[in-house]
Image 1 (cartoon, rainbow, N blue to C red):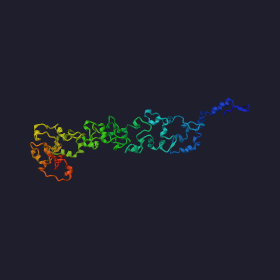
Image 2 (tube, rainbow, N blue to C red):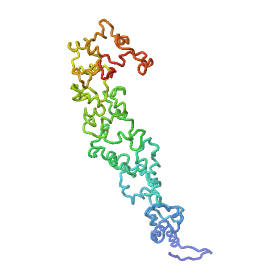
Image 3 (tube, one colour):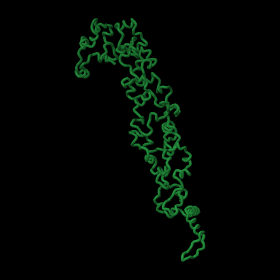
Image 4 (cartoon, helix red, strand yellow):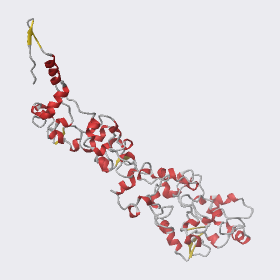
Length: 436
């Protein structure tokens, strides 16, 4: 310390100007900081601030704090009753954590765009959680994001266990939602074998996009398998071709029962339709009785070749539509055909014929109504009689005894009905001539 000369004048000590300037210089914060820098390593802040060290006695310490290198982040505070940082928090942290600093702003996790963002998730000195997190593991994410109990009844297991960093980069990523990699590859890391050769390039697409998130919610859903909707609504959301019809009553039963995946692989299969198998083997998985019919002596040639020759795989054949369908191969208007059908075009081919296979060359059903089998059409179709005569119970009772009024033939069940509502007047596949 420089001492200037002092002299007395009028009873007061006068401080020479040079000494006054020296005192001001030595008391300045910058000089104090410089002096403290020189003493760094000789004396730690924690030697005086013992209670501060006790308050931050967590299991995990920030390395500079553990080493007592307070000046790595803080300025010397002089006589001010506060500890100052050397720079804004985000700039200070990225001096050591360069990987975050080098990330383009548009790829950063949104909180990182705030000056004090690091302290939203991390403690600066000491913590009881790894990575100095303010809460354990993925629980810190719940400070801003919804938790498992808020995303639906079905929760993705990693999310239920708050393993957020299993899928997301906490600081940022070039991929959407801060994912570690594109969604398709990411899902395959836990769900191998879903795609051929584990390649998302073979993936089922939605609107041209290849991503599991087209159909599945990554965190939770109200629908099994984390689907975004029930399977019929989900599939028809993209596949609304006219052949699907406007109401569920027009669909193939597999669709009305929500079994689209009974025929289609939802993830990847060769071919545009993603069929699990090729017809007719695919159809036989559900319609084994048809396979047996086709093995009879007289299989229907069209059915034996391909079920799709007659059937739309998504829509039903409505009652009464068979003549138009059958007429694509059979000339239902030629004289010989009309003569064998009482001079009229048939209204329901399948009332008498099996469309798949038969033991009869004419593809007739096995059980025939005796008058029909004998060719005695006039027994029921009487000349001059109105067509409505066929709908009279009295006509049937000319040959058949009245059924006992039990079960299906109780008064309650049969009120307003006639025999042909349930029984075929010509042929059927069972001994009671039950239609269908």
